[in-house]
Image (cartoon, rainbow, N blue to C red):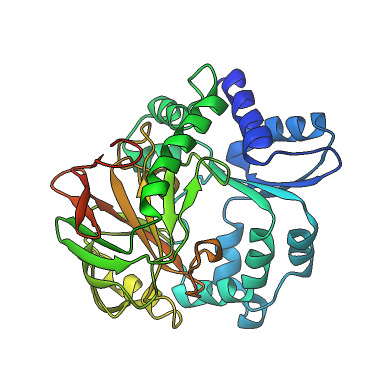
Length: 365
């Protein structure tokens, strides 16, 4: 990626996403692979009169810790990390894995101990301004089945960095998404149909959020929290799912009264069941999202991009976003994508509003 593109990316993160102001403390957290973007963000933060704090993770350290730490160590809350989450003004998180399968040998139960222990850190951080982005690495390109150069071009396009005015492009997408939200705000019941999927749920009284690139870069979705006891029917995830260093294929779930009552996967079923049994909220839906980014059109194996594919739906098991009105609580938040672009449709209060990935109301209708 060229220095010019990296600089434009950093400016987008610092100015549009995080809106950094003089005197603020901004945490930049990443891995070594993203050094060019980390350095560009550092310079941009300094030039805005703010104070950058850099945290870089080294390959293999997290894996070693999860394999070798005692349960007491796993269950401890790092006080410095908690203090940092409570006192910073904003956070730029840049994912940049050199090995997307490095966690595949980790016992999910040990990871769950860490996730539960660090929930106070996550909650404190979520109350601050934050943005998540993902730097193109060879590992991500391999997962996507693309060369690094082609993957970099895809990433660039997904963030509108190849356009003369990226901020203007994000603002325009935000306006179009607002049009769809204006329609969905009055909807009570949604039915999602696709190959292997026929799921009905209620969104009555819930708030739809316009994800226009402020917290995820790239973004391009609207989302809400379905009523916790409303999901009924079946869901099939047509794409492979990558989580915890594992690839799961053919995930199929059955819902009754809002809860997963049956679960199957053609590959990775044991891991799927272990995630569903993490806690009481893991079997309920915490999010319904609608992908609307026109620059994201193919599966890559990275959920940050894939859940924004235009014409798709994603549903997350576990934790709700409180700003939607959702009340489900869990250490899990796991997005599963339903591809409605071929033979799929969404019905809202009995009216077909999206068919074969094309919206008939709101943003495209």
